Length: 106
Picture 1 (cartoon, one colour):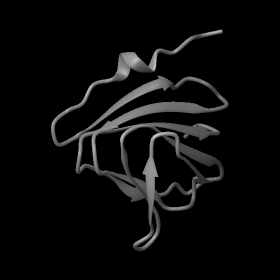
Picture 2 (picture 1 turned 60 degrees about the horizontal axis):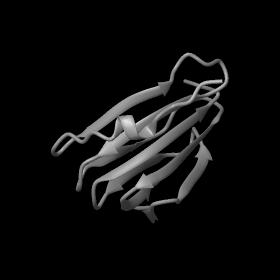
Picture 3 (picture 1 turned 180 degrees about the horizontal axis):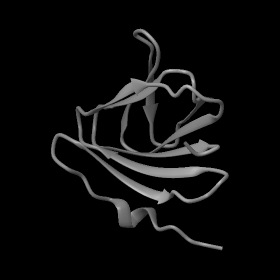
Picture 4 (picture 1 turned 90 degrees about the horizontal axis):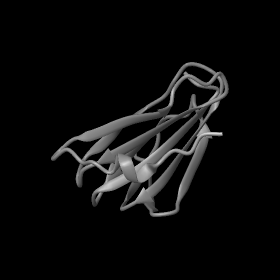
């Protein structure tokens, strides 16, 4: 068993996104913590492979982004789940902390 301390990843870079790999070497999934400063966008993207991605809002608020102009309000406790092939991204309205889980890992 391994305990990960999310509070240890609570760091923001003015006007940017901070990425911390929490689990990177598992054959089953990858967990990444992202901290987005207010106004920062994690661009909409997709991956040409099978699998799923979840994006959980740990702190803050903003929007989950999708194909075209798709925008879904997101706040603390919300989780987006989609196919990894489906376009996905995030825009932070306030400082926003998200936890991304990818299975299987890419």
